[in-house]
Amino acid sequence: MRKRSGDRTEQLIQPNAENQYKVRGEDVPLSCPMPGMYLWNSHPKVYLPIENSGHAKCPYCGASYTLIDGLSG
Image 1 (tube, rainbow, N blue to C red):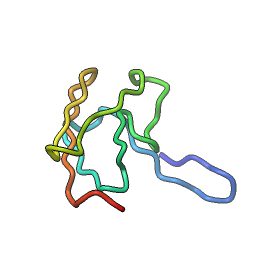
Image 2: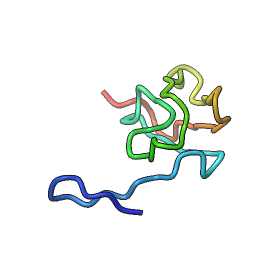
Image 3: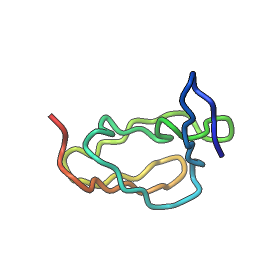
Image 4: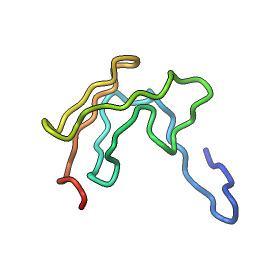
């Protein structure tokens, strides 16, 4: 599904559509749902500590996140 944002068209991700997400260092600080996901039918935003272990799990929806590259910066 697409959303029009200014002159750009962005691809939005359906939250909780998958159980496993691969994220990059540029996504830190990591939150669930992530920016770019639909929010209307999801849970409140929660920040997930992925920096130390490279893995995090959302306490609301159970989505699992894996850091696939190092932290940016």
